[in-house]
Image: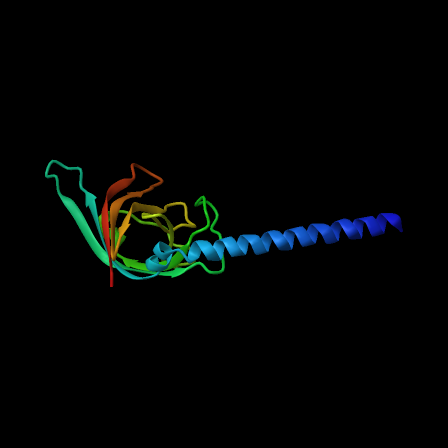
Length: 166
């Protein structure tokens, strides 16, 4: 009987510590999402991506589209991207025109986003083996920077991007 009582007490303490830890984590997460830069990132954006062709003509290929982002208020994680995204969303961009193909998860063109200060990171196809990653700076109602596409066979691709709030 003593073993059962001790185990029940230990289990109760562990549960209480776990719940307290979750509350602390949830409070910290809500505080992180309340940051003005994170709040500003949520919304609808126009995006333009350019890819350096790499040929002798020194041409850039260009594609435009849309990205819609919402806060990750449920604190959901995505395996394989290194951190809990602050925003989630969807995109409508014809990446085929750039010769890259970020994967989709369950047919959904998903994007996950992170921001620290004014540094922005967006990952298109985050739960797939072929993500496309954008890194740049958020300034007011626009952002700009570079992107990199990961490919299984052959070299990836690089270029630059701009985002403008719709």
